[in-house]
Image (cartoon, rainbow, N blue to C red; front, side, top):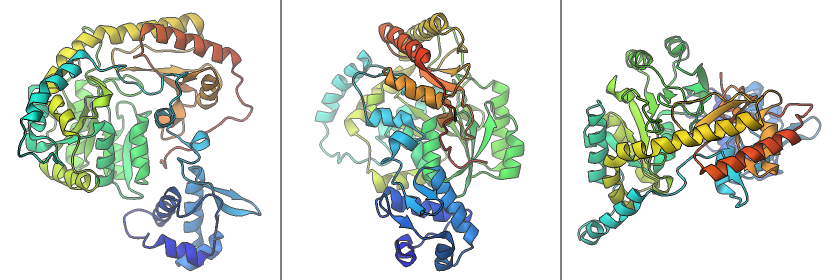
Length: 474
């Protein structure tokens, strides 16, 4: 494609924070994902393109290298730089979030241990919908648009935080379409291309995708945020993200001392700290957990949801944050979504007070699934390292050899979907890890273990290790 034509399509790309190459890559990424630069289009040579854009050649080279690492373009000696297509178009080969692909391309014959959630709506959901019908029928002056959320639901969520030790008013709650929308809104509100975001490694892949979409540069710390203060001082991230209770995927729980220290550093350094507490209610029987991180520092940004503790099909989540942050997120949300499903929010208003009782009822089932899957794996695959957890919904498994990516492909051919560790690790590490969830019924978990064992017997690691490009990380 002629460099002048590409330049015209770029439009304004250099406004914003961050290195020029990240800004350029971000704009090219958008054009590719939106189809403006179609698969097969030849991009200008870096020297010519740099001259046309009036930037250094190294800026173009770095932008091209970043897009190549994502699988969006291909660079070959002698044949130039070509567009491969968007990540969605090339997902079977290049995506770093197969969790989403399993939802986008479901297979009825597939057992999926990749996306964890309750199998079916519990009875309380059916009852909540039945109870809300009269209230819905009685509405006469209700347009149904609530960008910040249905007021009684905001009040119910606020009351729950107050009861858990973090005094909260309804004005500090934003209702979202699940926890993933909450993450996306926060990423859009706080992150500009090239900004640094501090995350644990490994971590929830949906969070990595949200930050990746905003072209964030990820700074990583081990589970527990060891070295948090030094990293904040050295890197000055615009946002930090942690899962303090039953961390996804490891199941780790931060101690009270760790929580207080992290909250204190974030407050002193003025770094917005996002605490993802969606898995916090998934404790096993007789397991106690600390209160929300917001109980240690009032300005913590908390994410919650009914997806894991009640049912994912409700698509009801929330953000608890200082009022200015909620106002900012509400404005962003209103541009794309004038408000969530009102009947679902009516039902959720009665479900939020039931979270503790529902979680207690499900605790034994969670532990039983955990124990069963570990026992079956120990019998069929004793060489695998499968550490136990005390809550959550996932096992973080270490393979004795090979890598998670190539084994996940073998497993898929045997009818089971799993997550390779690389996709949860912004550094590109965790190559010998896979993530499995244990929320299926017993019969399905038993069949899953059999398929995993069959896949392992057929598995032959490639001579050249496969890799999935991680989000830009330092």
